[in-house]
Image 1 (cartoon, rainbow, N blue to C red):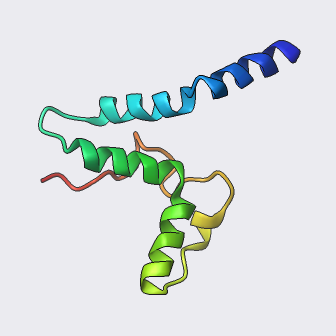
Image 2: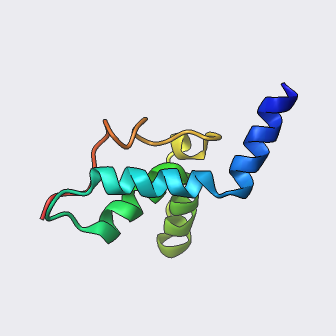
Length: 87
């Protein structure tokens, strides 16, 4: 357990989570994909509650309950869920 904790701490210090998010954007990006749109979608999947809170601040609407659950995503997976609309 101690070795696993040390590895996780090192990965956190090295910014591994951010690199995984970038890799997922790179994998989702098609030849004519919108990199900014894909990055925004992946970020939304990573922290939907923040996006819903911002939307609530802007329009005054309550966020869906499922977006407020700890650690959950709204579609379950960036790879299998609905992505940004193709242009």
